[in-house]
Amino acid sequence: MNKRRPLIAGNWKMNKTTAEARDFAIRFQEQVADITDVDMLICAPFTALSALKEELEESIIHIGAQNMHYETKGAFTGEISAEMLLDLACTYVIIGHSERRDYFKEDDELIAKKVKAALDNGLTPILCVGENLALRESGRALAFVRGQVEKNLMELTPAELAKVVIAYEPIWAIGTGKTASAEDAQEMCSGIRSTLAGIAGSVADEIRILYGGSVKSGNIASMMAQPDIDGALVGGASLDVEEFVKLVQNAR
Ligand code: PEP
Picture 1 (cartoon, rainbow, N blue to C red):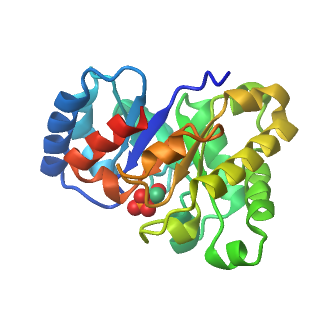
Picture 2 (picture 1 turned 90 degrees about the vertical axis):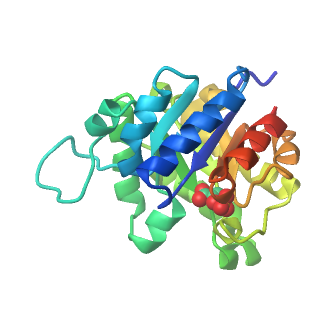
Picture 3 (picture 1 turned 60 degrees about the horizontal axis):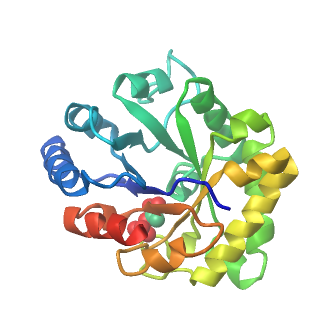
């Protein structure tokens, strides 16, 4: 039986001022206060984390960041460390989002270091993996994603691996309105789980795997019905309070 606790994570990307973040947090919290069977998380821009800490630290809603540096401190202009995120009540951090891989040229070696640093500091990394359209159309999507999982997580012990969350996000489905079919998403997530089993054996059954890519309140239920999908990483639909509340409700 699947004992993995569902996780619905919002990724606000580069959206929301402090005031907008605070307003969202207050209204969201009011509407999901009675939901205890799904973990809820908001991954906000660094500049909004302090407001979220003030509004949500005592609530059931988790706070996360969208990136971090692997070093703890030092001469890394413009960067943020795990320690700084912990100070802002973060418990999760997204690592290796496709936008960071593509626009900021983050490679697998760097992403592996960030995952390890997050774990070493007590943050839960949400490792994003996923293929682009060319890989999907050429039939090499699963082989590519398996490779990402191996390169990004190979150095971890099984105990460390058990704490990681994976988000399978086909790049062609992010922000495009195109969603993978629930069957295709399940096939990929099942392939990811068997890759994890190859690295860490039975621990793979404990690892939460999320689907991400144009998830909305209207399509979340079909994703959650899949045996290897334990939640969602949600971009656009996490920006509107009413829609995100509905999405969480429909995920249950
Ligand atoms: C994301 O940014 O991780 C994402 C899945 O975005 P969207 O839901 O907008 O496709």
